[in-house]
Image (cartoon, rainbow, N blue to C red; front, side, top):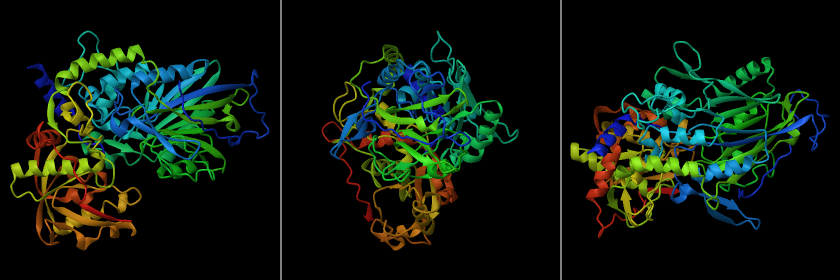
Length: 599
């Protein structure tokens, strides 16, 4: 989910603040790319014809400079005996060390990313409009990235500032000694064009060159970005088809003599296993992955030699056949800096192309058992000091870990209840509240993140959960519209990947996953406080401004009448937690039993 710009919240909070140890391996042998003689000899050590080019990649960092906590800071590793184990992972201090170690001995090394480097970030970055993350990426020696949908959270002008530097137009410069210089690497936005001019808002492609070796990169975000970003963030922009755009610029690169091409695509898939080292090419090429990236990969021109992807926060290194039927590597490195992908591209100096027979790729864990990179530690310390007075402020207490996983999550229930409580405070006629799951960016961990003590929730932790600065809006919907909205969770744009709304206390229904489409929501099971929803009656419904604008495919929620725009959603959550918890009576872990799921 990618809601409204954060500048309102940031400005307000700042004003208040003023008073290789790699694990696992995966390799795939692949036939030569289209147009290349399949009899071309394989790479031989010491051969002058072939040059191995290392491609290190990651995606969906989301401003996670510090090691993410809870399940967001762990990855699952498949063991030789078929069991799995969980490994703590992530944190840019460790990511820097791993990347630097991986580059040793590789004179031809490129580091690339597939979008969502910023946006939905923890407070240490989000509070400062993600300048800290851009600074960190510069230190990580990132060479190039595509834009993701979250890069548009604050609009194209702010994205341009992150690229080119300069002080924030509202909040000014945070570092009085050194003006923010922007990204040292290019953001690529080939399929994002200005509606008036038809031209890309940023560079569509970029070429890496060294000693005669040339590798081109084309960057795109998902065509559906406008459906998951606030309208303000994408105003005046057009998002083109991913395949058409990549194929167009592949021809442009080829005309320039660049035959080795990598696509950076902020769209992804779902592997059959959550283990980062799962062999998704077993039993057959691509059998272990599903989702939008499969069709994209099958239609992107064979001129493209590899696809680095993201968006779904999944880990995979798979081969998917290109349009000529030949396998091609498609990778994703989970999210939050927990993994990085190491891909070897064997460059043929005679043809200028990649010998796909030699391509291999593997995801590696960003473990925390390596030394921290001192320059990144220093960067984190700087921004943490600036944010500490705000981040460390206690706002409430919890009795245990309150997670955000599952169709209905304990934290989802809690946030929906908080929004209903706020709604009733401004309009006693409020009946219910709904919350989109994508707007809940992390769970609340019980273990202390600093010196606050176990079970204490700080403002910084709450900010990490809800970083978007949405407002809590109230709208009138008929009972029939409420049911339709619930059905839109599992139909239309959300049928392939359901988005289950989190619901406030008193609202109950049955979700029958044995059925398909809208029928999965059993209409006559929808009840409010034990009484069946009356299709003809009017209900006062609270939701964040993103949903109230029809975001995440919930068009029906965007049709509400008698709209009342309320206050900040995080402020509503803070007030609720403060009012309903104490050191002696912490907030209990919700049971998440409002939706009855039939499988």
